[in-house]
Image (cartoon, rainbow, N blue to C red; front, side, top):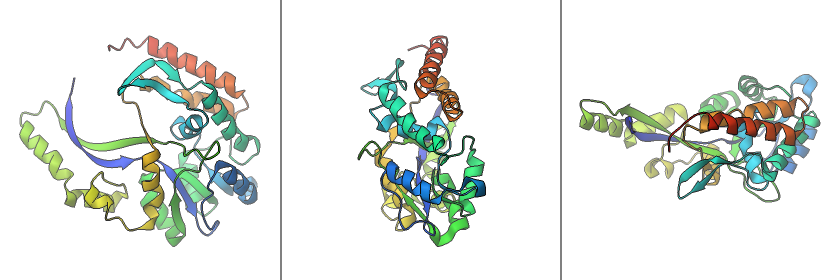
Length: 279
């Protein structure tokens, strides 16, 4: 049942940020990232060539690029929560590629978003994966040294996907003044207010009038990555899927990739089976 009305305010996905004082351009492939990381990383000094938060949200790109790992099967826009593709061969191969960075000491086994952000702002990291929410923060810290790029190609020349979402202003479906509520949502996402939101947050509104007018090259990685994105499933059964973070933590601490993934996915399936959600 629809319980809110709203209008989209921003397109959101993640992409690569890099420090031009440490590299002339972003590595084009994940193998190039590995080589660059070997050259720049000195973990004893908290210096790294590449950092990505060890979360399923970000590592889905690895899981999908190596043979099509997917969250739920989909037909005509309808998700099948009984069909989970996160433990297929492609997902496992992708996480093995990620684990190569861990095993080589090029990524710390434990890493938080706050630490990643802090090190990058201090100029100690060549490239990080993050989203538009950090655009103004990174820009303030690095100035003209900040640049962006789409995610590096993986599995040969596969452009890896990233989860794409849309932020929206929502108003209550139960409003006694639904027409006024709809007018409010429209007002908050008109050209003027969308421009204000963009100016303050750095997040791109889904309005051609603004997207076409963006001239700052800092947004190149953002806009190039969006077409490679995949929509994040918005069904209740998505909630247990975030337990994939458990598998990633196990992998970071030395567990076999295949075992960690398959055990976690089975647990996710069991949790979904007990949810009792209706079709």
